[in-house]
Image 1 (cartoon, rainbow, N blue to C red):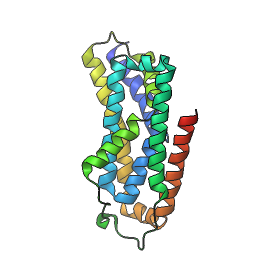
Image 2: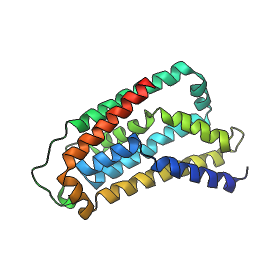
Image 3: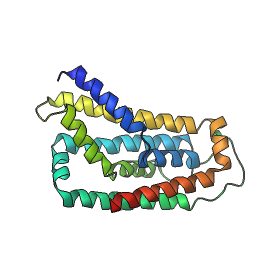
Image 4: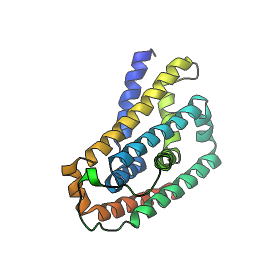
Length: 207
């Protein structure tokens, strides 16, 4: 398979995978709505970087090992599911705001950019679906025999697409006219998203 054919296939598959609702989407949305555009963008960057870790070990052939070692996949599921439950619990504790303010005036809850970034990374790294997803993609289009530069381009492009999608989500949800509507029911949205996150975590652990 030549470079551009593989590039097109990867792009098509990855765009569909990125826009599918999941823990990354829920978390980026939650952070944007509760803490503003900057926090959402940092989370989006963290998600992209976290996916880079999956790409790295997949290129090194570890994804195939994980797929064939049931105990290792089970461990990843338990760790990932537990972290999702933790993130969801944070959303369930959300309280109603006293007033609706312009998004440009929203002050993020005290949390360093590095901490926000790290939480975004963990949200993706501990997603147990990522290893299985990458195994399927690598089986279709990639091969250990491919040149390193080609694998690197594919991997970097997949990371960029993921960041681009979630950055778009953060921008959309931080538009004043859109955000003001969400703020009125912000605490309920946080609780609903938190509940979904907890549900995802429990499903992951029990699957």
